[in-house]
Amino acid sequence: MATEAELKAAGDKYVPKDYDPALYKLRHSLAHVLAQAVVEKFPQAKPTIGPPIEFGFYYDFDLDVNPTEGDLEWISNRMRQIIKGKHPFKVREISADEGRVLFKDNPYKLDLIDGLTKGQDEYGNASTDAPTLTVYQQDTFTDLCRGPHVGTTGDLDPKGFKIQQVTGSYWRGKSDNKMLKRFHATAWASGEDLKAHLARLEEAERRDHRKLGRELDLFANEAVFGSGFPMLLPKGATIRRILETFITEYERRAGYQHVFTPDIAKKELYKISGHWDHYKDSMFPPMDMGEGGSDDEELCLRPMCCPHHIQVYKSKARSYRDLPIRIAELGNMYRFERSGVVGGLSRVRCMTLNDAHLFVRPDQVKDEIAGVIRLMKRAYADLGITEYRFRLSKHDPLNPDPKKRDKYVDNPAMWESSIQMLRDVLTESGVPFFEADGEAAFYGPKIDVQVKDVMGREETLSTIQADQHLPSQFALEYKDSDDTPKRPVMIHRGVISTMERMMSYLIELYAGAFPVWLAPVQVAIVPIGDRHFEFAQKLADALLDKDFRVDADLSAKRMNAKIRDAQLQKIPYILVIGDKEMEANAVAVRLRTGEDLGAKPVPEFVALLEQANRSRTLK
Ligand code: ATP
Ligand code: ZN
Ligand code: ZN
Image (tube, rainbow, N blue to C red; front, side):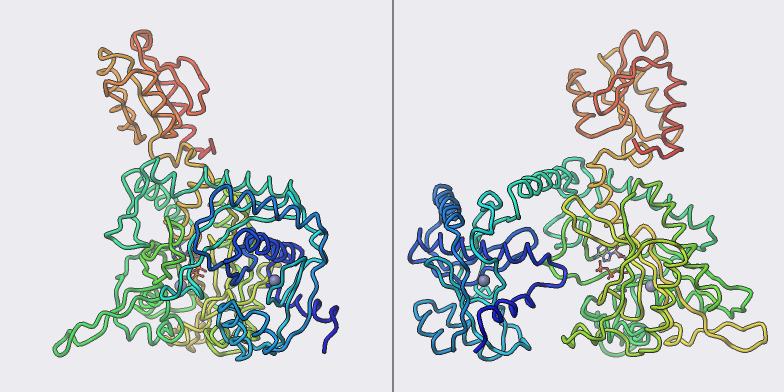
């Protein structure tokens, strides 16, 4: 039998890799404190499981009443009392039989005990852990639990948590099981930390691209299209066009050649590329074109453009002098993302990637990757993205879970040399980076560029991959200076990500108030009365003619209402036109922030607009 100290130490191994252990313990401990309070309030409630999650924890109960606001307040107050009681968390080992007696009135815990004795974790997944059963007790409450916990409830801050809501959830997540009540709480080491979190949450809601997408008429999700298939409305489409022109121009100047390749190809193509073996789970099922004739085949929606750009490379014989060859496309791709993770524009099922594949000689790999990093840095600077970090994303050969370990191509020498190559480039480029297992592409390691949202959640915008696998699958060659055939290395790269993800990121970065060069409408013209409409319309036409994006508000609304509308639409410049302005061929310029720049002659305003647009100033 293990001692209490040994049992407690053993619990530490359950803290997930990326989780702060102190936060994990305090959240897990608060979950027990909450469970005690809930059971005191509702003695019929049966606790099930209550794990720490990203910003707090939840706890699921079998409970047939809907707790009121008053109940939740009672529970919170009771939790504070329990915390102040400084009750130690005591652990002891029990046998399965003891457990079955202890929890005889709770079928969920009995189910858990059965699972544990069969080597399953609390979610019913196979676990490699030896089935040692432990219970933790604080004050009057005992729970089946593997830990870890804080020493006593006195280590928790009575002001550091907040019960947020109660929702429904199913036991084991299966909808044929009974509906449970899930208590959600956010929990932190101190009252100040909690306050800071709630402020971030509020800011994130203000910037939420789904909310702003509706308010600013940028995009919409139609149930009839299905989840993960948003449509861009005219204003969103305008932003996308600007981004596309912006990046293709940069690429053209950096020596890329743009192509169009089909979104659909025979399954055979993905068998050769290895997508069928390694990436099938993320692909839509193939379309069976029926028996017989020339249609006797299966077609796939492409999940990546790599095999297509390979065909471009193969379309003619290549010599060492032709390389590097940089093939780019705003490529449409289709990925069967799980419905639980798709949302808004940041993770969709049909997307357009700023994709390119560079076919290079081995001696060119480093320079070409460094070139991509330079391109990326310039694009980010123009877009106003200043906070990002580089991640060297590797495969996961030591993962005990075969599903996670074996999804990569099996070629240890290739992995080792490719990883080392990327590590060298990063080091030589002088950019700080960190390494992560299990984030590689199936065919090779990547350099990913990670950005954070308001809540501190990271996502990938840019990615660069050095690949020796696909060139060999497709037997790519070039003729070297000594006339012998050689194999090129393929660099996959996306600089500004998918149009969808980049838009979601920019909407949140700017809270919808885009810099002038990205704003779907740059200028709102507000004539004060009917007699100013003609002048307003002419001015709008003149600005349109210079390729500016203009909206003249010729509605019957009052001036102040028109100005307010333009401000709510976050239009950078609002031009008010009355008698004085008309006479002087001038405009009264206001910014969306409310700032008044006063009257300016039309040519002067045009010069100002031109300057803001061209220099991509970030206001
Ligand atoms: P993730 O890990 O985000 O699923 P990935 O590693 O599968 O992405 P790549 O195949 O490298 O991604 O795709 C290139 C880029 O496309 C990603 O870095 C990301 O910015 C973007 N992207 C990937 N999947 C989606 C998606 N479902 N919706 C929108 N953008 C996406
Ligand atoms: Zn616990
Ligand atoms: Zn690729």
